[in-house]
Length: 300
Image (tube, rainbow, N blue to C red):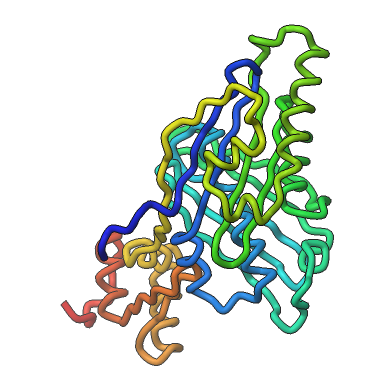
């Protein structure tokens, strides 16, 4: 595959005269890769794009080595949205949905009534952390803003948009008091910055480059824009991981599955549609490698 111009990246910015920072994300190729795996209805594709944008913004904010997992669950027409983004900025995602119950103009509340949003940080070393809040906002942007209101003291706001082709996001976050020591000055400044960000339309964020967006919002502020950090779609599935899942079943159950499925087991990755096949000989080899005795009449 030839290298194409970077279409997927985050870009951090900071206010030199305020205690606040921000980040912008643009997703195109990785978003297209995710959507290409399943025939998602347009409203579901938009939600997936917004959740991808949120995950991309959060990975830079959390500063950890490992995996960030975002899951939105409900009993509605969309029971699951799931995005995984690694600290190396490799992202994948999927949704489960009932297309017959999703109208063309369906809202978040229509698709995921009484839903919950779970944010899980799974570090390479250290303790796994999970936070859960209700999906009680009109949009995913509001839900993530509410999450940070509930879980952290630091002010954080999200603006997330996707249209089936591009997914974009903007995050603003307060920094510890340094330049503005007076609490009222600090609060007034934060309200000023977020109010200006709130004037940005979906069309503007989806169509304008980052420099233009920041000039449009903050041309009277001292803003520094840092280098871009690229993202890409990558699925972490593999034949080895699929084999390990079979080993976890136990030898007898795995052998029975081979018989029940006509001589081979198919394991499909829901994220990328890759298919892994295992026959009786493969099962014997897997369990021999795991140190499990297999019957003597198995092929060698």
